[in-house]
Length: 326
Image (tube, rainbow, N blue to C red; front, top):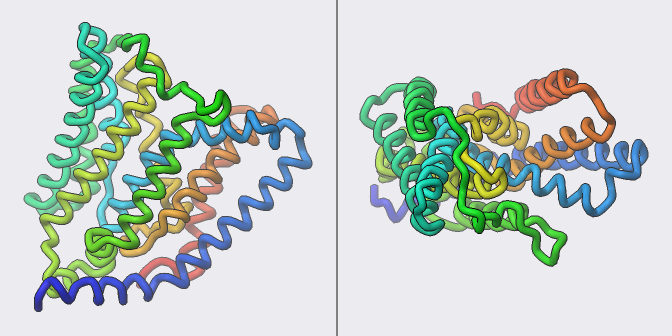
């Protein structure tokens, strides 16, 4: 069968899951509205414009990483190297700036490192035919070790002019938040309106059927992991400029939260279904809850428990509702 017939089959597989995806996004939106109303009643600091933009800034890195995580999961894979790629990419750029390289050269080098990591991940997953979980778990340790070699375990100062991660548009809107919104729009367009986006859903839904439809599974998987790493590289540059220095643990906490944001947003771990808007709402939910708990001065250990319960609850409700493929 020719590849030209693929889009129609991919569109059909997308329509099959459309109603379930819409239902979960609706439930997530309702939960967000309830929490927002409750917080507006609990404290007047929540709805102040500075706090709202602060939430947008806080979720910017998490949201960018969640985009990449969602894309990989929709394709039926998983990437546990999210945080370590961000650390390695950011520290590569920081090390070059620390040694006197220009900002442009350092950023380009950091992005290239991220892309190479994604390319390597994809190639290993395809060539080994092993579970992506195992491959990326091993590579997570490899990238962590390389990052430690790059930094020597120290904080690396960056160029004074590399501050776009702390910049504000019109002295109000955080630039990282704008970057996040733009990237969400771009990925939404790619997944919904391009052939490559439809292939991602088709591969995650049923790789055998996708192969029989003429889709080159291995090649597209490599593209997916590479694009994911490119997205992570952008996140690394935003995070580096926001922190003002690079260190080996700068991305450590991102992996679990990014995958959690995608899952809360309705991305099914078995692949084939998920929505960019759902991911955005999932990340926003995590950000609002974290911000709310801080405003209410809830102890940090209770915050961890609360967010963990929400993640488990979201997955539980998703599966009870039949969103998990059977």
